[in-house]
Length: 257
Image (cartoon, rainbow, N blue to C red):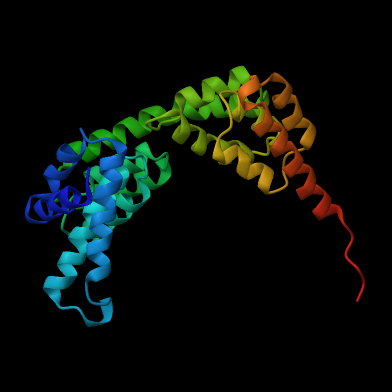
């Protein structure tokens, strides 16, 4: 999508119903979504600074942020849209229904449950049935997830990890993995075992983060490197070397004085 077409899309979105925006974005490819997000943010940058805006400009800012966030969400980056929906719900512009659903999709289950319960306390809560259905799914899934978590903590094997991830809510494997890693670490599972299991399907950012924190031994990564396909083996060896450097820096004694 050319820049002019993306800007025209943004202009139409600003005059339309925000509820219809996801349907308009759904068939677009990543290049088009990036162009629309860039066009919305470019318009934002041309507006007066926040300290000197009237109500109309403030509303225009909000709508432009929403267009940019919706485009980003359709590429898999849910954070900006969650932030916008949270503000809209707080200010009474929108129900919490979609916010709860996106929090679940992003693997932020505890947060989703808190928002859903807060929303349902309001007798005039819009889309009460939709929010209640999301909360019911969360509560139904939680028992199976807790059982799988306990099983993994007791025996942190690859098979137990597969069962845990399969029961973890989230719209895709990456988001389920993102929720599972901190959960098992909080239960005291060894970081090397977590890294080994979490990288069963390949490198993921949250497993690399364990390396960057100095929690994973180089030997653990080297075992993965030896098992990896030739095309990805160099990435594993590079990560093992990084782990070794991080651990050496941590072990290096500080000079007195």
